[in-house]
Length: 327
Image (cartoon, one colour):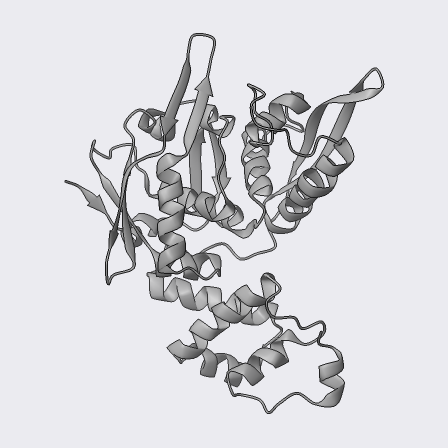
């Protein structure tokens, strides 16, 4: 049995790219944002020369450090359990393949590690990179919180060397995003185009443009009086975020990510930065604080950096004017 560890798997070049067969990119499947992050990380570990039966080790702490999100035992188990039951539906002119991604997922108690095994039927679609593939940056995939943004980013990346995607019918796009059951058994979501724009398209466009190497827009195309199709315009741009440091040891990568988080909080005093980075407890609290800030569990309208310094005991409680900036 061959086992690949995540540390070895990510120790490649800066700006690691996932390469994914276009049949997978356009396949119909339903996943949560958390499940997709696990899949993205798993895809980054795959190599063409991997043997049948290879197991891939994914660590909770690795994902936490790289994504800035908090993970726990129960979330991991629920996500991998769901991934075991999810299926890709890959269709061409000759056949329809229904296949699961994972053959098995085994949690190693006390280590915070899941060993994942790929289903052999889907392996060729994941590792055959000869011609027909999509590439997208792992960091960008992690940075998108909306599951629809993650999927649309994958689709747009397939066309990133052109100025726009092909034209998709709204029916086909909704099927790809698991918002519509092609058999009509399950109810369609966001049946009004205005709701589809507000909760899916506009959220995806905003997140992709702010966090990735692509800048996209979209055009809805009418047939008669009703919107029937959509196409996305695509430009490549320099991502604003620092590339994930995959060429470094994991501990160094974690510190670089922590430096970036401190810069985002506008904590730039050299003495404070080095003091925080020098204590593992404070680094853990930094990632936890940023996660809570991003998800709205902590709210600070004007001075989130000051609030973090207070939380870790490096600053006295906020003054009255500072508290006014908090909600």
